[in-house]
Length: 128
Image (cartoon, rainbow, N blue to C red; front, side, top):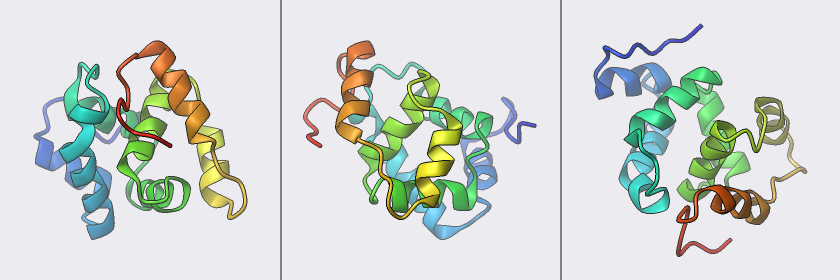
């Protein structure tokens, strides 16, 4: 069941996704700060990422684990995960599996190359 409502303000959405956890708020702030230069073709602005998190139940600690463990604290990789989910390039099960593993890692070079094949300007200027 979705936690976000289209009538909520941005601040309310951030509060719902983060549950007020400082680390998760910092990840969301990083996405808000950098998403336009990383993903200029995102038509829904920050709301596209927030609703993706809601759709795939990526809240609070889940977002922090994805960002810190899987994405090595790099916002471009976190946004790539969200875009990969939106585009069907990666499944929620894969994210859970990789985020909980200390050994397995996603090949971000391949994921970002796949996203660029669909959205040509994605992460332009970022090298993996």
